[in-house]
Image (tube, rainbow, N blue to C red):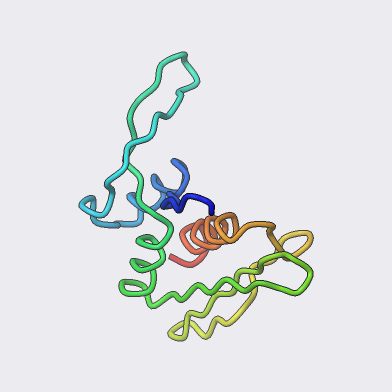
Length: 114
């Protein structure tokens, strides 16, 4: 049986979450970010689920991930206050892991909806 782990947002997504006002107390896990000048720094990140909960509770933005019969995942968004009900689009409209779909959906919301 595989070991269960928590999945964290990427450093780039964590920075977007902070920029958009997510409470710093939600960020618990540190990762190392390599800077382009040969240095690195510790950056705090949160789990996908905490980020999705924040989007849902603060911005009324709902993300759902669906498993399709062909073995791929799709990400769907609902933002009732803005009249948005859509599937996030990429070239193939799908991702191969649940976590990848979550990451893309969170990042999309932060870049285009919030």
